[in-house]
Structure formats: structure tokens, C-alpha cells
Length: 412
Ligand code: CTP
Image 1 (tube, rainbow, N blue to C red):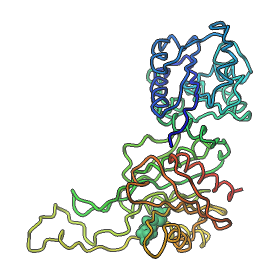
Image 2: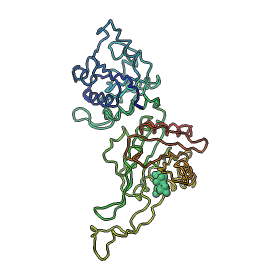
Image 3: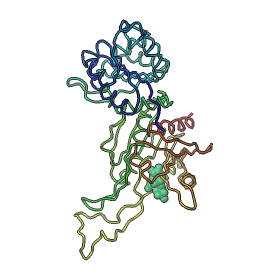
Image 4: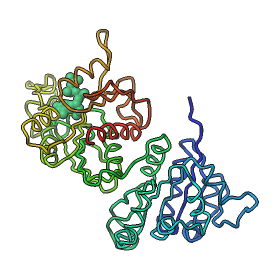
């Protein structure tokens, strides 16, 4: 059943990243939601009202004195299902923190009782200035979600934290909150290590054994963990096309051995370890230095000899038991299952949960185009202390939010 369109206010403040708000509006509209753009007067120095009107299909005002008969300064905020401000400048953040209502955008925020998501974009010095730091803390304390800015190229030659995250990342976060999962900023002292994507085992310089994992679920987990304020490390196999979540560190790996080594190194001081990667269970017994030829007398391709790879997840659980990991670390595994005539996918997943010994297992029923390579997922969250929690069909970000909420309950 198609979802009812939600009403989203996109606030735009006066910064160079205002042009990216156009892509955000388009993304939100393409997912079937209604968008009303409310720029600050300064934002219109960067992008014209006509552009926002054409993209949103709605009129654009900046002051409380436009369409006074419609009481816009109250109506827009009252009827919004979510307000997202992207980009949010240091100035607009300060005005919201002070409770001001001196333009239509700040008046709308003051009225809104729905989720408000502020997406900062500014120079690093402004982001790190104690005034901004305090204002951001004030907003978060009041229940406003303030996204972590991305690190990277800013206006001119500057580079550092303060860049607007990609519009698609912002849109996913907005939709996660609209689906009822608020992202608290409560993991600032936590380190989260996540494996994502799929490992590849080389056969020769041009061929490999691999799998269909896109890395989307691992990256969605990294995105939500980073927005909760955690230090996030992604150990990524074959995920080059996905945008890296704001502030997350990425370690690219190829084989299961690479992944195992990177996970062992990063996990030592981790509070949460998540094995979302689809790990190749076997690798070729021999890797040829030059391209293998077919049809030769010793054609190795026609009968590959494989050897089993180590089970990384089980290895991490064993390291914890041996006291080699941080006390209280929570370990999460995944199970990609298909049912058969003897057992359901859930029953197979429950057996795997016992075998692996982790604290949480996200079980997915795969096959028939489900989960692998998709932007959506569904399944069950298994824990030691409760019945399987059904995870309804939803975006991988919404699924990630639920997995991290389960982890948070165990942590606390
Ligand atoms: N995993 C791992 N090391 C492996 C294989 C899997 O760490 N060599 C992890 C995966 O990252 C996942 C969990 O174990 O968190 C389950 O992976 P899955 O492929 O579903 O299970 P397998 O252990 O490979 O079992 P099977 O293929 O028999 O279903």
C-alpha cells in the first residue's frame, strides 16, 4: 500500500550550500512527500525563489508579512510532519537557540511540534566556535536533531568539518525520523566498528569470487551511529560507490583475511562491533600470478580447489571471552537466510544465533530479489533476553535505527 504523502518543510539559510537544497527537495518529492520551501531572505542571494517554487510546486515566502491573511508564520509549522533546515548557518542556529522569530523560517521552527532536523554547513572555525558549540548543544537538549557535518572541501580552499552532507544522506535521515525513529545524540563516548559490503577472493589478476552485497545496510548503520555522535569506523569490502557517512573513518579491504585483520585492530577499543559484511566463506587454495587460461591441460578454472575462511564473527566473540576486547562490548551479527521444506528462515537464523554467540543477530529472509542490493530490508532482531522482534519492511536506515536501539538497551 502506498504511503500517505507527508508534509515536509525545507528551510534554507544563506550559505553557499543552498544550491544543494534543490537536490534535497527533489529527493523528498520523488519519494512521494509534499515539500514547502522556506528560505531565509539571505538564502535567496544564492538560489532564486522561482527555483524552489518550481521544484517544490509550492509558493515561497521568506517573511512573516507575506500572505498575512493565511497566518503563514503559524500555519506552516503547525501543519508540518517534519522541518529540515539544510543548510543551517551559524546565524540561523543562533537565532533558533535564542528562540527568535524574526523571519518566516525561525517563526516556523518556534511553532513546530514535529521532528526538526538541522543540517549545519559553515566554515570549520564557525562550527568549532564556542558560541556555535553551545547553541548546537542547546538545540540537541531541546530534542532537535542536529546532523554532524561532513568533513571535506568548503568554500574557497578551506577543508575540514563543516561541509553539508550529501542531499541523499539528509533525505534518508529525514525519512527515518518521519517513520518515527528519532536519532538521539547519546553515543558521543562510544566507538562503533562496522564491517560492510562483501569480501572478494582473488583467483588470478583479473578474476575473483564475490557476492552481491552492496554495503547499504552497513553504511546505513554507520550513518545512524555517526549521527548518534559515535566515533565510527567502517571496514568496507567493495562499497566504493556509497557516500561515506559524516565523520566516519573508512578502511577499504578486499579479502576475508584483510577484513579479519582490520576488524581485529579496530575492535580492541570498540564499544559496539557489527558484522554486517557478507564474508566469503571460502577462498581459492591457490591464487595464480598470471591470468588462468581455459582449455589447457591443467585448467584450474574447471575444478576450483577452495579452502574455508575463518569465521570473523565467531573469532571476535572468542576474543571477547578471552578478555581481549573492551569490557561490556556488544557484538552484532547478521544472518542472510532462506527457508526450506524443513525449517523457516527464522528457525535457521535462531540456530545461527546460537552457533555464533553474539549478543544481537539481525536475521533477513533473502532470495527472490529481497534485501541484497536493495535499499529496503525486513526480518527479525534476535536478542538473548527477549523474543524475536519483528522488523517490518522499511528502508535500511529505519532497520539500522531499530538495530542500534536494541544495542543501546543492552549497553545501558
Ligand atoms: N561471518 C563472518 N565470517 C565468515 C562468514 C560469516 O564473520 N567467514 C559473519 C557475517 O558477517 C554475519 C554472520 O557471520 O554477521 C552470518 O553470516 P552468514 O553468511 O549468514 O552465515 P555463515 O556463517 O556464512 O553460514 P551459512 O553460509 O552456512 O549460512
